[in-house]
Length: 112
Length: 112
Image (cartoon, rainbow over all chains, first blue to last red):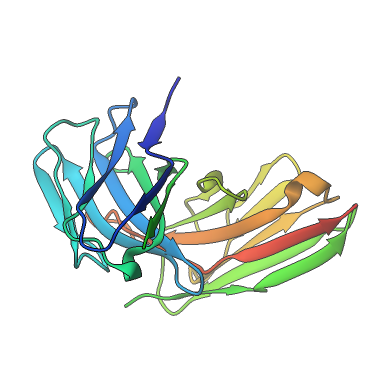
């Protein structure tokens, strides 16, 4: 049971480049979330999705784009990466009507 | 917006000792969740609480949903080295809002 996976696990990119982080879940959960985790800030919500083709902004959406054409996938794109986007990114999912979110293993992104 | 105050920020204990940590909020939550994050991994759900006053155990872990619905507590009994990690609380206000509010975490170190 794969659960929720993220790829790549580690990524180094240059300022200004576009980079896409992938998230895939096998539970058919309706809701999916993207967070970034930084020292001193904890987990902050970037975007979330209630279902395929339904997405909404979280706390820190600027500089990020998401899509959800299929229930199981929720990619996060940094259109033009900046050093301030160096962080650890976590994807999570939850069933409809329930609060419990299940997290992926994370992607550590470094923007040079 | 909603904020969670999690304390203590860090703890350094001897193996075998019991541990207590808590989260308080200025707002009411309908669900409290406790997660553990190991280094380099994503948060893993430990315990979910759904009713005010509820006390729930998971092995050596016991968590309580505060009677005011504004706080929650996590206790770990007879700590072992693998308990090392960051423990997060999260609150969910319910309804159609599926977002979680996270505490900043408690870093637990266990000395063998």
